[in-house]
Image (cartoon, rainbow, N blue to C red; front, side, top):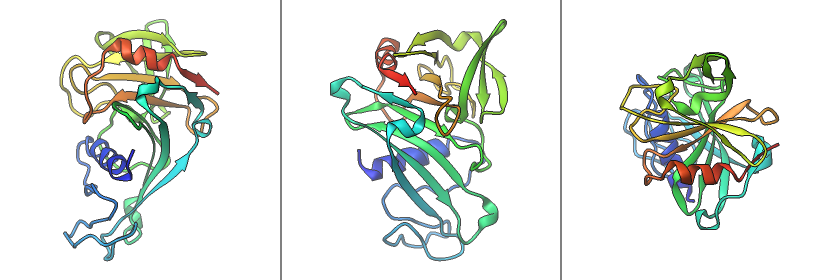
Length: 225
């Protein structure tokens, strides 16, 4: 999986939030909000430049391991960081992101709640879920419990040693912790021994469509640490 693809996918998902003004970067260079020509390396000149980095991680560092189907290729994960050295008051953004080298349909995301920019929410902001007497609740940025609409719930599905909550989008919606487009699959995990309390496997907005059964097959290979 190329760094270009990973960065482009991160930019797409970050920009899904309403009101987000992060500039798009679709190459391994960095551009600025002022339209200056990109320069080589991870930083851009000028007060409006920003810095993007990808720190490679191992599966064990994020609270689970996975043994995907052979034709999905290798699962790799990075900690993606965006900062604004010239404008630190903007804040910064950290997100754990996983990709399969031969299967672009499914990605993994988990937003660090201590490093998040102002924008609308999306499924990658959910850090775990709970089953209560009156339904399922997801933990938005690990702090706010939001009830899952019953119309979206496929149900809990088995992992190698636990459960995940699988949802499927029914209709297009604005920024949300739940699937935002019809047919999108989102599986929430609890990762109590990872750097964050949970994360999400989801079908990519830029990838091919897969069935709920295919997602179940993948989730069955996930082992929570």
